[in-house]
Amino acid sequence: MLKTLVSFVFTLIISFNNIAQTNQDEVQLMQSIYGMEKRDIVAEFIELSDSQEKDFWALYDEYELKRQELGKERMRLLSSYVNDYGEVKPENADNFMKQVIPLRIKFDKLIDNYYKKIKTNLDPVVAMQFYQMENYLADSIKMELLEEIYTTKKQ
Image 1: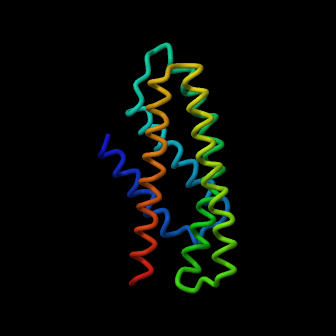
Image 2: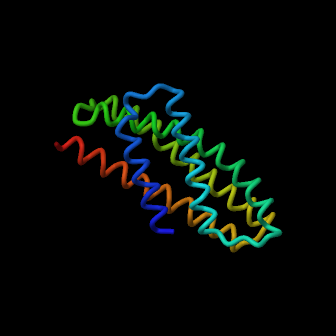
């Protein structure tokens, strides 16, 4: 599990180095690859009975489509942040934060909504595992990306 997660984060970091130069199709491709790899990690972590498999993955696929849309926006914002790092003007900083904060709230609401759906339709334990895994992955990726930004910009 840990080896898969490390591989996943490493792949994402390598992909991030090229974000500023990508067009919309490449961002969509990255999101597609990310979702497929992420699904494998989720499958290893979440303990599902045979009777839960179909219903969980239907809900998860629905969730993942919505998460990917938010992920595209997050990557766009991160790209603009990287491009402006060290040269941000006060009005640009405020505008950036006016986009980042609502996006974070949307992401949190999305996870909360799907936690409730999974709990109601399947099982509270599966819902808890989903919630923990999604937050863990999101936080780990965010920390790795921020580390990459600061390391790259300091050089």
